[in-house]
Image 1 (tube, rainbow, N blue to C red):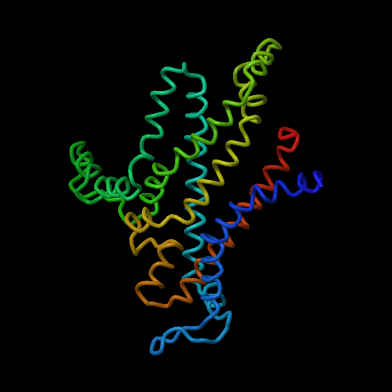
Image 2 (image 1 turned 90 degrees about the horizontal axis):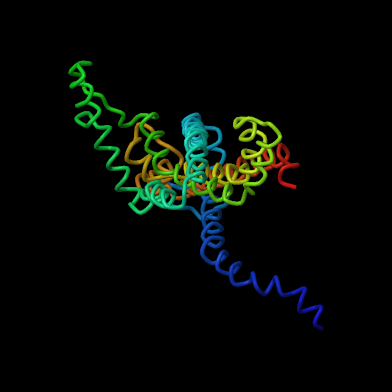
Length: 287
């Protein structure tokens, strides 16, 4: 009897979390998927039929293809930039003394204490035609023409990197904290240079943090709404803003639901493929 209880213990312990997940995430996603299988008529509203027409429309329309391409291109670019910024930043933090590390860690994580909408509005003031960029450009004598990054791909990239780079720093820094300092000391004792120790010892052991940080940043960028909506506007739509428009502008809820489901599926497929690729590449390190 005791053996049966031991085998069932993990299921009983995870049951509350599973119920919570199904109730708050699984059920709404299922309802969204079922909604996407209905057609829509602008005169009578949502129909009671069952069809894959919404998915065929999204996958076959060049307009939506361009939006999906822009979204995942933006997610990939933001992820790469966050890796290039966050990994060295986390490494420097790990080498600081505890006193300075606490101060700079607070500086890095401080933006997370501010609403993403407030931060994005700050970037909007900076990027606007009468913003700080224009003032600096005119002060340096580059001309009187306004400099604006609003409603541009570059502006969205900069704003999203600022919003998401702390997640990369946290992930990599947590991974670096688990590294045994003696492994690096052993490399130095064997005559390895600092660059070799960083490349052959530190970086492979930090790879789980880089992997998890990349997944977090990519997923959050691909599904971001507030920052692309403010900085990109209607000129630079992403999938999240396109789904929003279908729900609230055209009131075509089934089409908006289909866009949301396709975004989720594409996110899962890309992240799972990336995870498998990295695990194969660094299988020996993870073992």
